[in-house]
Image (tube, rainbow, N blue to C red; front, side, top):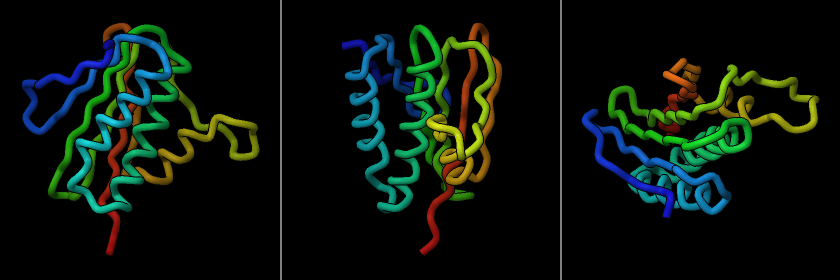
Length: 135
């Protein structure tokens, strides 16, 4: 199977490598993520899953080659950091809400405390900080 979880030398980070490039990999990544977020309350888990889903979809549809998903739960401030790395070029941009399709980053922007893009060797990482929900 082209989806592999592994340990990382960065404490608290969990990493999933998606070396294939098909929809079954995305489904496996979502199941892996949901299992890792089992300690979160339902609203925070749903928000985090939305961000993971949108960032993975963007990488799947706009980049070639392997994708890496990284998760890190932080206690103070309470949040989950989501990072998706790929080998695609260009910087993802939010589209006008009136445009057909392409609303994934609008969702990420609404849900995340902060989000951004960093250049990597031969690709990029899109990250978001999903805050714990109030109440």
